[in-house]
Image (cartoon, rainbow, N blue to C red; front, top):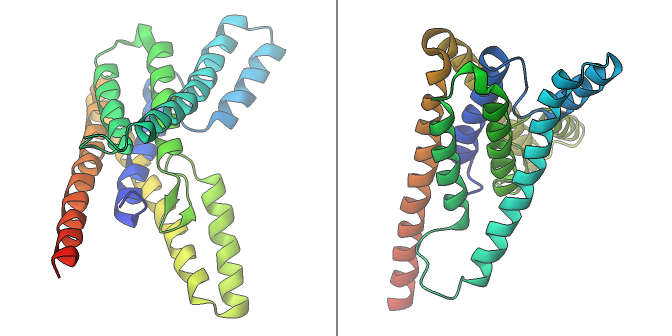
Length: 229
C-alpha cells in the first residue's frame, strides 16, 4: 500500500504545500529542494553574508539528519518485526511528520530558521520512507527526478509502444501534477492563514496514516481467508 498511487498523490500534495509555505511565509527558503538552498548558501558565502548563509545551511543539515533518522527507524522496526507490533514503520514516520508540522504552525516569524529546518527534516523523512509508486522510484517532495524519469518513459513508450512505460509515465506526471496542486493550495492557504496554513498539511498526512491501517486490515482478512480455504 505504501507504493500506491493514492498515497503518492497525498504525499505529493503535502510536499508541494511545504515548499510553497516555506518560500512564501518563512523567508524564501525551500523546504524540499536542497539544491536551491545549496546554491543560495553559496551565493551568500560569496557575498560574505555569514548569518544569511547560515539560514540556508541549517535546513540542508536538517535534511541530511532526517534521512539518517528514517533509516534508523526502519532498521529498528525490522529488528522488532517478529514481535507484537501493530503499526508499520512508515506510519511512525507519517505520524512524526504530522506532529512536527502541527507544532511548527504556531511558531512566529522570529523562529523561521527553526521552522524551515524542521520542515526540511520532515521532508527528508518522507522522501526516504516513501520511495516508490507502483514499483517505480518516485519522490513526493521534489520533481526534478520525476520529470526526468517521466519524460524518459514517454520516449520509450513512443518508440516501442511499451504499455508498461506508458503506465510509469502517467504515474510520474501524475505525482508532478499533485505536487503542483499542493503548491497552489499552499500559496492560497498561506495568503489566507499565514503561519497557521501549515496545519492544513496534517489532513493528507493523517489520511496516509489511516489508509495504511485499512489496507493492512484488508490484507490480513484476505490472508486468513486463503488459509481457511
